[in-house]
Amino acid sequence: MTLKLDQSWQAVLDKLKTWARINSPWAIHFNSGSCNGCDIEILATLTPRYDVERLGIKLQGSPRHADVLICTGPVTRQARDRLVRIYEQMPEPKFVIAVGSCALSGGAFRGCYNILGGIDQVIPVDVYVPGCPPRPEAIIDGVVKLLAKLRGADPSDTPMVFDPDSAGEAAILAGEDPVGEAAHDQREEEAIA
Ligand code: SF4
Image (cartoon, rainbow, N blue to C red; front, side, top):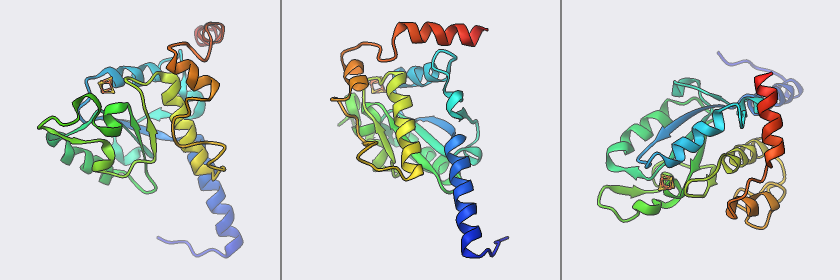
């Protein structure tokens, strides 16, 4: 059923939908050929230590309930059709985040006989999160950039590519923890309390 609303009500409805979408991005995770390194980082992102539910992000088991498809690994010939099927089962509007160097370009598996390449060789990708594997902070950063894109923020404020000059990302590249041990301890105490 399609509702016919006048322009002002349609604008209010669109704003309401965007608000709801930004505050509750439900995600589904698909491994199209990863070594599992990136998948472990995604699992770590979902634990109370990083607590992505505070951003409204929830992992779903069904593509029919998900807004965001989080993909890891290069696309193997065997996984290609399954990846396309999952993407097609998601309702519009849908978004894709490619996590890890393999998901970006094939990474360590590039050129193998059974590899088609990165995720964007098969389905459109909205946000790329590089790293082998990317740390949870980088994955959260990717999700936040996707939400900023949905909000219509200035892309120069929220670059859709990894920015090695920013303090947090420079720390990630150096193998440091950009959040800081004290902040982690505080979150753990809050999670336990
Ligand atoms: S990017 Fe690294 S950790 Fe992730 S799937 Fe590829 S090889 Fe594994």
